[in-house]
Amino acid sequence: YNPLVRLLIAESLKRPVEFAHQLFWHTRAEMEFSHPAHIERYALLLQEVLMSIPKTVRTDLEKSLILVKGLEKVARIAKEKGQIGRAYGEVASHLTELNTTLFEQEPNGVQLPLDPRLRVQSLRVEKCKV
Image: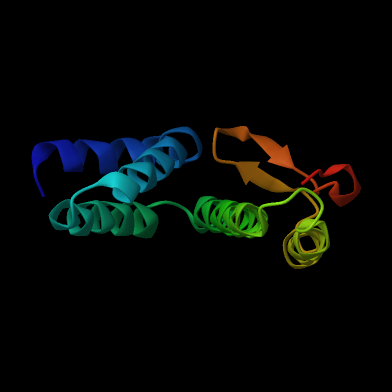
């Protein structure tokens, strides 16, 4: 690894909750819009960081990722349906499923990608508007 990667991994080990969390989400964001040749390098960096950090931090990141992917799926469904009200039933069912699979297993909630100190306890499906 180059010196920058070694530094990032070392900092992730020193401060896994703060630094590794931010590194994980920023690297994932870069992967979304990067040239395919660069994605493999980002993936290797993420793999190394995830293998190095404590299991509890890794588990928190995995659950946050499940939440984000679930919300992305709901957003895609709402966008595909197009008209207001048409997508509500399907969106509500996916949000309820996400609540059941993710939050009922996690009494402490799930970390938000923006800040590891913030946790979501559940999704308020009845407050959602499409």
